[in-house]
Length: 476
Image 1 (cartoon, helix red, strand yellow):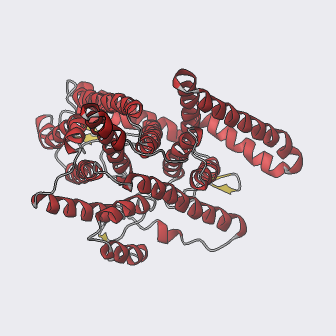
Image 2 (cartoon, rainbow, N blue to C red):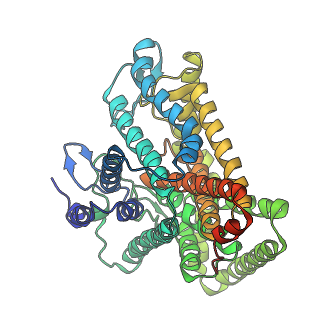
Image 3 (cartoon, one colour):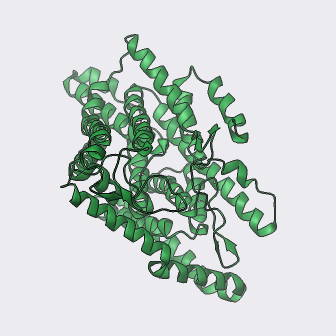
């Protein structure tokens, strides 16, 4: 059955099926509707972003079979080599480990049911479904990285579309907020149409309904919106004066605060602290001035709110105090204790399998790191650490090597967004399956690969050609 949102989004995607660049943009836009489904079959719903991702992968493979190649594809593949190894190992583990340790380990099943209890490890449908998600995300990362390794301004346009997508999430969230506050009609069934997700959209804190927008729960919205806020903030600190990052930063920050989700608050605090630390260690004088100015504005606004709201709007101050108390006391809640138990059991599963893990898709945790330890074991976590550390080092080195402002802008923006998403997932995400994360990863790899190749080309070119090949500066 095609859903209402599917009736709107599927024709748009099919109209652009022969334009790979537009399909990548649609991946970013459609990822906003994470709790919706284009098509529902039984208890399974097709996530909107998977359709343009699948069409792009098909178009790329078709062109690859016809002999199409891209300039910096060698550099991109070298950067992705650890990632590809871990993905292949995870797919193999989903077949071997549930059979090797069958019945010897208790795991938390992937599908949340009314009786969500631990069960003996055995091959299940969760292995197959999670393999399909992982394979689709990995293929998107590899194919998009190779495609974006070509010259051109597509990376810049994708970053702008990413910020526009965040504004779509902001508009839907504020629509929900105004609907709850002023009793406007809000079609929650339109945005929350995927039966595969547990919809937690009716949570309240006092009289305030916690915002979840087009996502399944407030923590998911907070985890998503903090990423573009971080990317926009890093772009602004580095001198971007355009309206789009400014609007994304301030509106996204407001929505993150309205979610009342601890995940969003802690992520914003962590990203702010890392921004200040990075500025102090490696920032130039202009970046330090902007960071200090931003910190000063934040302190002034915070002081005005703390001092003025209790006298001007006592009821709002009372609800804000209730939100703060609920956030601080969350460690005493039953849900927090249950999530902590899930993570503790997941770490125990890794020990029970001698560090190899129970296999991809065999266990569901509450946060990312215990989930990875349980499913792919120490070898998988070490491989991802190798990939993340190498890519981070190569990206920082590439920023110093290149004079192309578009590549620098892309590497800084995607790096901040990916780091924010990782922090959110480490706090409250069992896995990272949203295609926009893997497309941002592909953009970072492609920008780094292009910078490496251009630096190598300039190094070996004669002086006259070297000056001609250097890109003109883009005004922020």
